Length: 191
Image 1 (cartoon, rainbow, N blue to C red):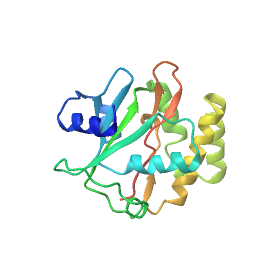
Image 2: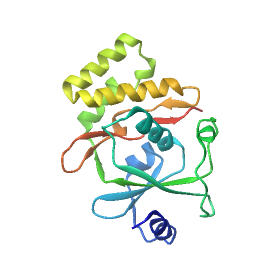
Image 3: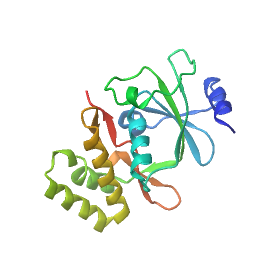
Image 4: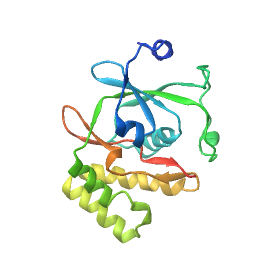
């Protein structure tokens, strides 16, 4: 199905909304069932746009399969994609960004707490502490995951006048089949 058809079906209410407190509270995102392996995300902020920018410029690998399929305003009218200048202006849009993404599951409480302890406050740590935290992630979980988190942190430092670091245990999820940990939504707009 192409993006236009998916958007038409979305606007016609053909996808069932899934209620997940973590997704609604953590990501400020509405999730809709698309098929057995994918969901639609309705995001009312630029957080995923910042993340998609990091995915493409930093060549990240521990990321979900995600693609923006459209942007609509509050009256369900299609909107042109904002330019990079608009995205990184520091102003929030009134748009709803619609994405299709592979289905993932939340990590267990133990893993989530680990990332809260070691990664959540990375922006408050000095360089030595950051590197130690990333080494712990590398040793306990996966070297590539630690590398991607470091790249995301670097992207954050390049745009910290506009975006805030928001990576914590609830912003990492697992692939359903493999349990591979992937990063989701590590940024929010700086208030």
